[in-house]
Image (cartoon, rainbow, N blue to C red):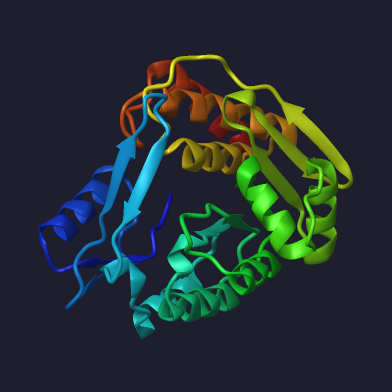
Length: 266
């Protein structure tokens, strides 16, 4: 079961967000209602190829996640398979402090960092701290170039970049996505390329997150790194073929998910 740590406003959008989380089976008990700030919104516009541009509103509830004693205690008590976080949620000092406290208290099997750079909402210091806290990192090829320059002062080829970043920050796995051209996964000195899936694209919103979810779910079910990336490509490809970031899964994909769950039980 997935748990979301965030904050929403005391408004209609916040109530709607909480209902949507409940509807999708997400544990929302760690989402706090901010008494003063509104629920965050993102305005998304798509170009003719379905590629999104984001306008991310500032000074909103999720910029100030409330870490009360109850949330702190419960996050420490829970047994987490994986803890996931990104860069955008760290754009405020308050959130960076909350994240650091939570990461220091929870002891998951894996810590997954989805780099997910948006506009100018990142700094070298945040990225380095995040890498030090992580075991698995996922980023796209554009982000790999930015971080290569930012951390190493040069544009490294992807295999060398993955090697350097794993050695420097003691990472287990690095996933680099290439859009329709698939992805590359690196572990223990070996870079494996996973083919993309040719298919229609309705819009790409949610494509990266669905890749992350597919990879983690499959990998935690006991598949190899390569098999997990293959499943991630399947999930990501389906999501970008539909309008909206969280479309209903078709029966064939639900069956794939059930087969992976069965693998855990065996």
